[in-house]
Every structure is written in C-alpha cells, then in structure tokens.
Amino acid sequence: MEAQEMVLEFTIRKRAHNLEQARDELKWQLKITQDEVQELQKDIRGLEMDLNAKQGFLKLAHTRLENRTKRPGVDLCWDEVQYGLVDEVKQLDATVQTLTQKLAQARNSLQDLQEHEACMQEDLSRKEEALALLRRCQEGRQRIAAANAQPEHPTSISGALALIGTTAGAVVPLTNSSGRHSVTKA
Image (cartoon, rainbow, N blue to C red; front, side, top):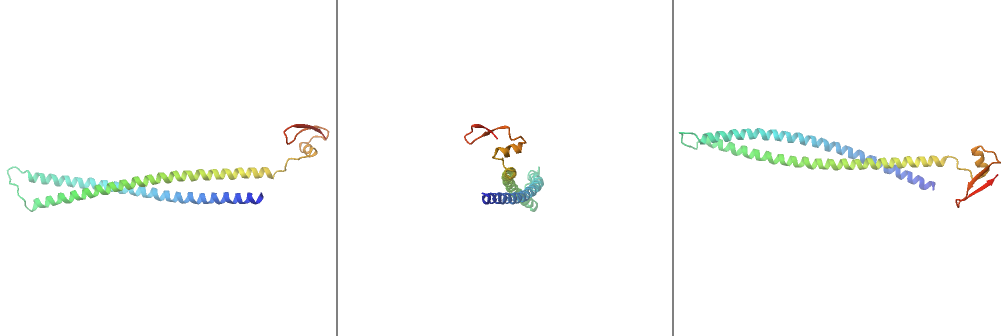
C-alpha cells in the first residue's frame, strides 16, 4: 500500500508539473499573440490612414479631369496634360484597390488572431482549473495522511478508558462490526 501511495503521489506531482509547464508555455504564446494583435491593429490603422489619403488625392485627380473635360467654350483636346491626368487617375485607382485588398486581408488576419487568442484564453482557463483541482487533491491527500499518522483508536477498553481519562470501573458502550451495541464492564 505504501508503494502504491508513493507511486500515486509521484504521478500527481508529475502531472501538476506538466500542467504548470503547459500553462506557462500557453501564457507565453498568449502574450506573443496579444503582441501580434496589437501590431496588426496598428498596421490596420496605418492602412486606413493611407487609404483615406489616397482617396483624397483620387478625388482631386477626378475633379481636375472632370473640370478639364467640361470646359465651356474650349474644345476637348487630348494633350499631354490630359494623358497625364488619366494615367494619374488609373494609378491612384490601382493603389486604392490594392490598399483596400490589403486592408481586408489584415482585418481577416486580425479576426483569425482574435479567435485564436480566445481559444488560447479558454485553454488557459481549463489548465488553471485542472491545476487547482490537482492542488486540492494533493491537499486532501495530505490531510488524510496527517490524520492517519495520528495514533490509531485503541481497540481495548482499558486503552479507550485511558485515552478519555475514565476510571476502569465505568461502563463504556462499544459497537461491534454488526453495528449492535454491547455494554461491557471493565
């Protein structure tokens, strides 16, 4: 029995150690993931600012092109300035479209990272609960072991009387294994 008890204690300690290592590793990964989320949020804010700036330039280029196209009293001519404005609008449109795609990808990545972070938080919570349960189990086993280490209850009447400080002539009710009481006089 003692050998089994020692093996069980070792197994519980080993499991607790493994859980602590897994919890610490998960905390480290969670911190890295949170740092990545913050970095990605910063990148998204930068992309949004760039996109807003490019849209402003695109509106300006469209306005210039429209004003040039609708000049009263002047014939529409395709000169170098007109070609330049058209090329600028095309380049700005392509840039806005690229920035919009990058922004959508970054938002999808952020959502995936946040879902992964939530799963990690849940897993960390489970590990903390399992570790707390193992610790309570160890504490309970220690209390039981401490209770078993105290002197056992005496089986003889004289030992029982000595324990409670009663004289040998007193009547002490005893219970046998069947649960019936028998009165014995010492």
